[in-house]
Length: 251
Ligand code: NAD
Image 1: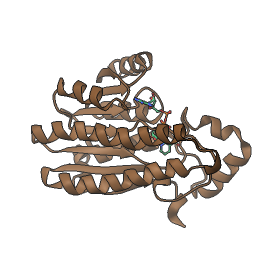
Image 2: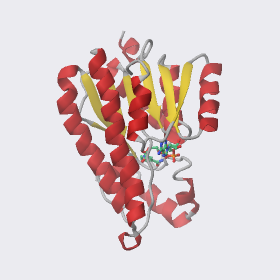
Image 3: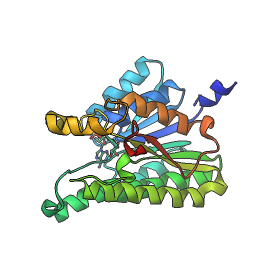
Image 4: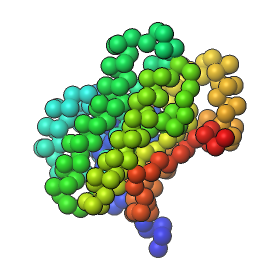
């Protein structure tokens, strides 16, 4: 009986940054759990490939090619669609460098995508959820860096700590509508975003020294957590941060 609560049959899910990396893995997992998935990113070619893979596996997917920093374009695209039951607010970026080298352009890129776009995409999705009156689940892709600090990550940490605060406040606002809002907080996951960082053996050693489980995270680790948070298995969970950090923040 409990296993049935993890199922997502009949639900509509929207995933941003679904063309590659974590977003792609999350979209594929939601589809495999039964959700009909809308894949959003800027590259049509990436999205078509993910959608074809989902269809080949027996799932349902459509693509939505746009830049999530275009708040008006995103809101307009959602107005033309039925409301979503699940939103994975995943598109994000990082520009690791010491504070001394951070430029205004870096600030706008990291905060503009990780915070500003996250806020206004959630606003557009939540409007639809409230109008439909069926409740829903919003999952903001945060990071262990939303709970600790690290060198060369001032902007990234600022954006993810802000996303944690946004999540709690939105959970308070939308609780009465049965819309749950939570974050997922992964440690370093092997994806196209992080692959270049691990070409530096000293950095790899330093990271593995802090992950108590002794390995980097994999996309599947995040995908499984997203299915849980999206599903009725997490029906009593809102305003929370689900740590997937292999114990990084435990000491
Ligand atoms: P990635 O760079 O591999 O993929 C990011 C995806 O977002 C891509 O599909 C990209 O096209 C899309 N995207 C970027 N800018 C966009 C925009 N303006 N509009 C629409 N789509 C856009 O990144 P990833 O490693 O998969 O990271 C995904 C999320 O997970 C981010 O929020 C990141 O901060 C978070 N995260 C990643 C790690 C990690 O180690 N990889 C750890 C913790 C948290």
